[in-house]
Image (cartoon, rainbow, N blue to C red; front, side):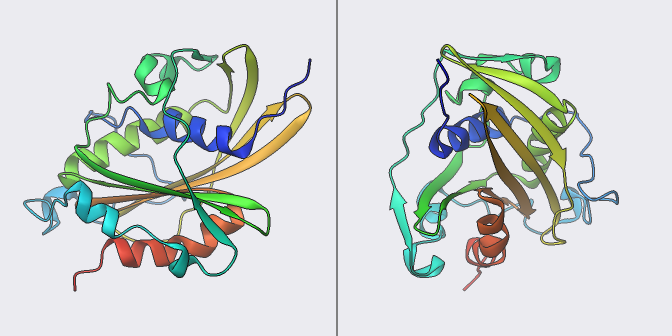
Length: 232
């Protein structure tokens, strides 16, 4: 039987695979646009020694319906990870362990976080995630996960008994913040394809990730970063 995978499931899997294991490591950050993605080293950034935001502070900086405009409805987070998710054909992701694949949080080393997801009546969804930690930890952890994903141009995820084929393509990220990463993921299951864009921007001790329909990610990235890093 062919099973169509909803965008809610896809976004949940994307977040789980890409970010659930954001822990400090020694992996070099690979540029997202063919040039140096690291415009400032964490040691040179004034916010590295301070400015870490709490989870409630991050939550207050998430986009809301009024920021997005008409047609958006916030929805509860439905995907919380599952031991039934298995990664096949990507040793780099497999090595990160079950927590990385399922989003259960065991490998997550960013202590402060907030998340919001929205549906759009014009067809699509967009999810915003904010994390805060020392700049060096954000840099190494995020680079490690994005490197693992883009290092495997094609792999498969088993969500329960449903196989989902995934291909990844690294794409240029806008020159925002201190570091940035971006890629497109194509999810294929049951004869249907779905493309999801994921862009991460680190600005000092704040990490912003916007995922979802490519046009919606591009439309709201600047606004999300401005609100997430506002100082006043």
